[in-house]
Amino acid sequence: MQVQGRCDAAFEPVRQAFAAILEEPHERGGGVCIQVGGKTVVDIWGGVKDAHGHAPWQRDTLVNAYCTIKPITAVAVLMLVERGRLGLDDPVAKHWPEFARHGKERITLRQVLSHTSGLPALRLPDRTPHMYDWNHMAQVTADEQPWWSPGTQVGYGATTYGWIIGELIRRVDGRDAGVFIHQEILEPHALDVFLGVPADQFKRIAHFEHAPGRVGDRFAQDLRTLILNEPAHVATLAFTNPSLSPTRTGNPHWWGYHQPGVCSHGNAHGLAGFYSALLQGKLLGPQLLKAFGTEQSAGFDQTLRRPMRYGLGCMMEHAADPDASYCMGPQAFGHVGLGGPVAFADPDREMSFGFVTTTMGSHVLMDPRARTLAALAFAAVE
Image (cartoon, rainbow, N blue to C red):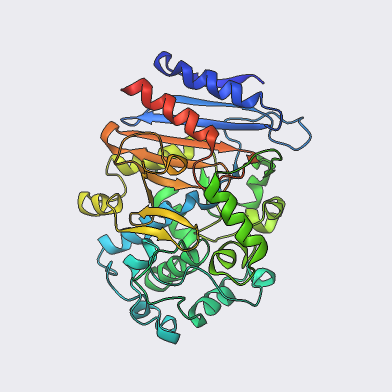
């Protein structure tokens, strides 16, 4: 498949590796963007965006990017912290009184952002039938009890993060989290990322599905085995209640979904551009920017079932785990989307990176395709 776009000569190995990825049997289309010091050095794309192989991928093609939205949502709530509307160590219940039910009165914003709130999942019954009803899901979240004492363990809140932070934004600011994020972050900086794609932009969305033949790392395999065999386990429920299945991503309800923890659509240059704006101080002041990319929690994650490090709404570099590493500097931070998409920054090199794909793999953290491209990008600036 032909690769289109621009690539500085120093990054030619990235272009070649991306071209090789597009030739893989199950690959359809995708894009990669790298920016250094706010300057775009790689912005390439290729392949097709539809399931039948007829519609070419364009620079402005959008694709499901799952949880890459979490750091954007974190920056949104940190903007409110910076404006004095709430504090990092405020109990969530200070601004959302109903949230205090069942022992959650001391859970803080910092704990939610760093995945130590003790509320990483919703217990049964199955919430999938009502997942698009924001008010209902906010009430369900407020009614849930912690799985363990808040602050004592790490547990990635795949979906609960979005309902808690999103409702907190709504309670403090008055705007829906999707509206706030678009008005305060995405639109002012011309970032082609969406938390809820408008109906008139649906035609830009690429078909996204799981690709056969890809096997995740040992942690991902163990998590999958657990999910298949222990339906009431906290890790199972974190990813299945409600369902995050790739089959859901072809539904217009998903495309327009304002769930600021798990549902985003964008392209490589939109995601990389977010981190460039962040590094340049266009979104947060120096104090909160430093806190954002500083380790806030670390330990064995009870839902991802592997060691993790978190900042304020971002996943920190984890060099001890090659399958979780961004393949860049030790201060790198960002976020994956389940099965492939990823966006992150290396602040020491002022580098931002975005990768998107139509074909979901089986890795929960860094997909091998993204790791290959990131390592080559890192080599080009060293």
